[in-house]
Amino acid sequence: MDIHIIFGILLIATGAFSAGSFAVPFGKIKGWQWETYWMVYSLGAYIIMPLLACLLFTSDFITIIRSAPDDTIILVFILGAVYGVGNLSFGLALRYLGLSLGYALSLGLMLAIGTLIPPLIDGRLTVMIESSGGNLLLAGIAVAAVGIAFSAWAGIAKDKSVTQEKKQESIGEFNLVKGILAALLVGVTGSAMALGFEQGLPISGVAELSGIDPLFSMMPVYLVLLSGTFVSTLAWCIFLGIKNKSVKNYVSAKTSKKLVLNYGFGLLAGLLWFSQFIFYGMGQSKMGPFTFTSWGILMALTIGFASVWGLIRGEWKGAPGRVYVVMALSLLILIAASFMIGISGSV
Image (tube, rainbow, N blue to C red; front, side, top):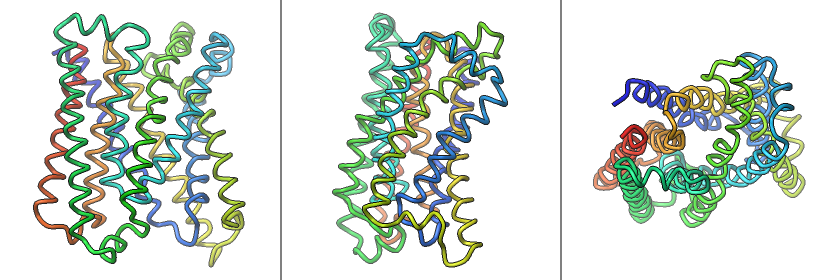
């Protein structure tokens, strides 16, 4: 296998660790309703961090975006807004299922759908299927589907074997049915991000022509895409804030120190979430002509890291040993699937 592919997978794995860890700071936020801290997180993840990344790595990003085709900019922005719906649903999946199961179901579906749609649209999938790498790609997606099924099985088994009180010790609003519905919506709408990355390649192409290192040429793409994500997120969080009368959360807490800490933890979550894409963009640049395989690697390894955090946080406390075995098996299957998808582009 090409050493560049190996290096690319390692970079993406670093991003997956960041992505799998982003929701951990939410557990430190006190006295705020979900829509409040999700809004603060979104401000950091979709606006502040992408702007800082562009200023740091692609200082001429405004000229780059203006030089890109208008239809590309509009399409990427719209795909970002669609992804915003998916990410709001993802927040609900984590709220109702916890880190381990929420990540496994949501991102597992995004892995399969998001890996296939972009190359199916632009014809690269047909080219790849004609080679031996195509068989490995399809096999990897099939293996990922098995991993998703195992993780869902573990979640259902946990739901049946653990009392409601035990579930809510680690996941305050545990609800299996609501969580699964949210995860299904994530899988469909969340894959718009993978498509947005691929459709945004003309923007990164302009960046490279202007002298930007290919490792960082995706930064302007992230800014356009996530601006769309922020718009849909802003609309929903404001609606919920008015409905639940939680708008006051932004300026009130038991103490001023807690208010500052709540903002700090919310923005830290945004920093961790966006950091995945710095490493993702660097890794994707090493994956050769089949850049779409990067998405499957990111999703599968993120599930793995998030599941470890879920175990540390005690989300599976009280479940019988067989449930742990099934969950661990699902993680191993998903990790294997990520590498099958990753190396398929080099076969």
